[in-house]
Image (tube, rainbow, N blue to C red):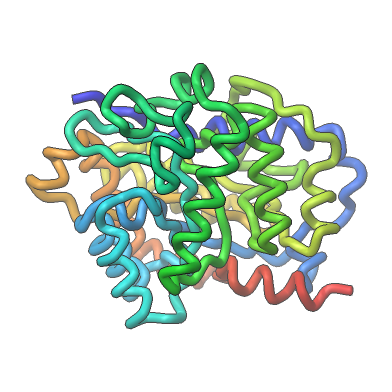
Length: 325
């Protein structure tokens, strides 16, 4: 069974690198620009991959209810989306976005595009499923088909009555090509839905994602997004996927919390209640189960309180951005 790591590191460091030349132009953190006081440390603990499987839905639901998770994102092509929608309707305050999905990365558990193969032929493999890694998407997928599919995923969610507080990118695919990225920004602005994008001064991004696979040439894009009325993050990281054990994750999360810089930061996890059924899907069960265990760990929860960290959601970010003149 292949184990493919989500390419969030690519996504975050690419955006960071694109925006670095504009660091001097940003005097305030985006947290301050959104109305929080100078020096405030604002965090979203964000769990990805809702709808992928029952075990992910269950783990994230518990982490929302008794842990630190404040925000989630859903993979619309996946089979457990109806079950997750049922949970959302019973819990309407949950901050749910879309994990726009252009890959189907597991060997024996796969999904196809929401738009259908005839509408987006460059997005599918010989099984009619989405390509199983980002490299194959880059090799085959046209930007037009990418835009058609991400619009279809958003429209499906809205038609189902699913809240869509933001959009981001599964495995970082939309950040791996300049044309895909342009379409992602365009669609977010058009739908007036916040997008995962960071400003020029990310600390965790520099620390944990120390490489750029491809540079996106998008001059001042974070300010374009801000000027369009959407919030921008100061920092983000998905480095937790690389930490395998609960003990390692707990140590690293506590270190991150203590060293957190001022601004709005998204810390991405994949909370899952691992079982034999999940292990038949993916070899990533250990790191996902460990994410869940750390997100509900009393010591970590208490440290967040002791450090004066303010927890937020994408819904609150958009509300605050709407209030800024």
